[in-house]
Image (cartoon, rainbow, N blue to C red; front, top):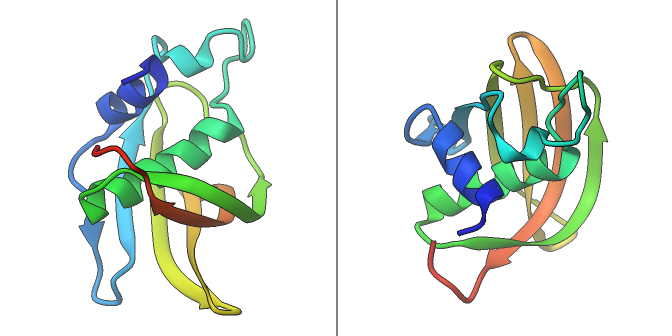
Length: 128
């Protein structure tokens, strides 16, 4: 497992939960030592957008019980930065749009939406 994936697993604050509608929720906190902050940006670290996507992939993988891979990004908006030591809440649900099974995710720190994305995932060949 690479350092970023290992860091995402370590940042998890507990098991994925589901609500009555089947939406997934996970909580994460990335410390100052998280590898994704290195060089992004010196003196003002923020969580890279690709890591935010990887967090959603990790959340779905954990829930599905098998590693998922990113197939496509249908839409993504990165609205506010995520800084070290902030609790990041990821809310994700499945939606079918034009015959495609997609994951609609919203990431928040407190009441502030940091990112929204609509992505397509598929099982990876390797196990989690």
